Length: 309
Image (cartoon, rainbow, N blue to C red; front, top):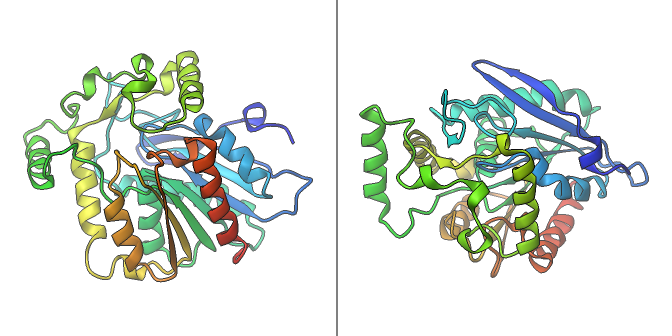
């Protein structure tokens, strides 16, 4: 099997007011073919960061479809003249991205079989929105530390929400959240980050970004934070989680300092047919973590998916 990094051939996805980059990867031909897995990355991420994960899925017999959300990776940026800002007007725009990916790339590959999905962080949040809107489209879904609430870094949530709303209403939606403008991934070292405890995998991403600096993002704008709060509020409404009927595996990180594990566990407990696993000690990026943490995730994934694919 040719590794993902050598077979990577990005394609364009057409959506209104945005340019999206996506890619497909064939399964390992020596394995039993199990259909299509839609791989959805998190905020600030990009397809190439997931080459290891893509090859692990291909080795399990899945074809893989991956995408960069609008505003990040190799997709078009949304703030003119400020490519390092992670920005969105509303999470319905991400819904449009996923709908376009499904319609234009995934559906032609299915051959009568429903796909599965694997989604991390913000990608998991968007996938949950999709499963609520379009039940039955996926045979099963797996989540790595999905964003059901992001950390407000020790501050109470309500003043942060009020501040994000006020900044957005006062015309500062595209301004960096305070402190994010000084956060360039190219200057970040291992001890200054809180996403993974795996030094080698962290450095692998850093080395790649140094060679492809156009793919990097620094952090969110006030508009992104406010849009995130609005979406989280919507998802916390009565019966929202209860209406997600797709069989789901939610793996949370026990030492997550980016998303709030307790909120993830509560949401998972409301979903019918959801298996919840907390990986004790893992930082937020479970799929970029040390081998012991990753093994726990893949063991749970394999056991879960055997029931459906």
